[in-house]
Image 1 (tube, rainbow, N blue to C red):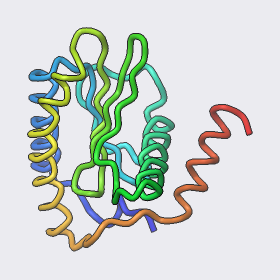
Image 2 (cartoon, one colour):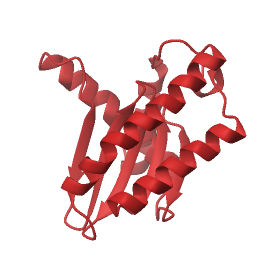
Image 3 (cartoon, rainbow, N blue to C red):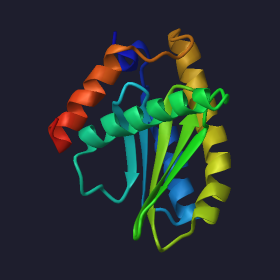
Length: 163
């Protein structure tokens, strides 16, 4: 079952999400904000268009978040609500939204992790409200990640990097 199909966007939902992400980018100085669902589907992109395959990126992002959920449990934590990956020039911050989708923030040296973290908290709160309303309206219920998803993510990783 594809969880993205179990809930739907209305035009006003999409507008609200786009507006919240655009405001977040303006406040934080980040370059791009993406919403990825836990099954690896890209839901929304705002800001600078990424210079990579967004479909593969969404799949890998969801796999990354899923793997980190497992690591958190091994450490006795229920989950890690946010992840941060820092590169020399490019960094990304991932935050759980409504336990169903992931906010992915791409930023470079034009801003700081501190500012991104400061601005992401209220944005996640507002996005959680929007997505929670959508899930409740559509009767999607509690989130879940199908086991076949991990196999799909592994296939995508193999395609990108070789077996």
